[in-house]
Length: 593
Image (cartoon, rainbow, N blue to C red; front, side, top):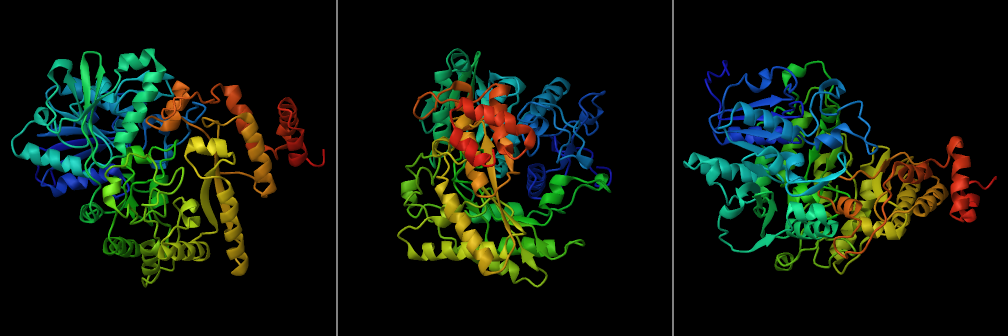
């Protein structure tokens, strides 16, 4: 501040992550955006919340507001494994230190600021705030918690990607309004007294069951989730109201998806693309992972039951222009330690760039959470041509030796054949080019399970499609004399999955010669379909009961089948399979007895 001749700042942003000035990190995006709007911005990364709180005092009082985020991840997922054990490192902290942010970081930082500066507005955002905007199940405390506004008493919550709402907020404040006046900004939520809810101009409100009603009746929580998810995936959503105590959380509908011009502008802000100089000689693994990668689009229309992406980014794809992407790649090629390899040309799902409904008037009436489950929507344009053009254009740049695809690929879309022959041909071409030119030895795909029953709960395609894709993968490798691996991801203990399903998964993947390494035990994270099923026991869309492994012993019984090849597990698994009356699977897993 002294170097810039500033005696005050407009906004002070507190973040649970180390500061990396790169478009993959939300704190940098919002900081640079606020700067572009003419504001003086200060960022306090990973403030010490345990001592005399000097980190919360050292920059004084902001002229406009405090902004608070837990960082790129929910702080509880960042801290704990699926077994609720403390993680030993943090990818978003220098040298992986695991003690640089508190549990429930948004709440802790907000409480400190409210106490110290009661008259300064607090805006909260990022994944932790976004996915906890209404009553949600918290796995770590094993209870239903109210929307995070009730806990933090923050003045405004921004959900989803923050560029459009924060821009509108700043413009309104610059016009002379106060934060208390901002009741109709899209993609924001706020607390109001029950009897003083501001009028809704459009007039279409959806009132959820109150927090207190959900505490008493899990079925009401399940019904709430369906309404919230459907509204999150609509082009023209309603305002959502939920009572908690003597207050009401008001959630305004989201902005329309960002235009190409808007998303380009965000990626073209003047990022240095490196960690802050204060971290000199320290290793930040999250940065190393994305250092030479480029994000092509936002949003995901997969709607997987266990995934938070569509709840945060939405199902409508916002794609960058080819020019913007190539400009970013050129900047990467000028970095001093660039060796010629782009680590990822990706997105939430690697192959959804430029895809949307052919007839948008149909999309305007749609509230399906997934455009590709249970079947690919006939109105969805699945043409991979634009993406192929990006890959080829990047590879033609003089300093690029090779570009890889590190993000997950949706092979169900590659195998899909519709009425559009151009799209069919492009999918075939893309599949071959991906395998031959863009795999860095290992291609990650996510079948997630082998049981079609479980996959249906997951909103994933049948495992028969994995067989089809593997056949193409093996054939292309053989044809081009490549020694590449297909690395499948699988989840145990997901709602709908039984011990017998896991036993069959073990036998099927053994038959395919896989010793699984990319595996995880289902972790219930806020605002996902799978979490609602886990907590309530009901499927929110059918209201039918769904079995879920919950106790540590039930979870371990499922997880152990991933490691059928471990000699220490053999005796235990044979006993389990005998109890399941599946001697046929014993013979498949242990043919030598």
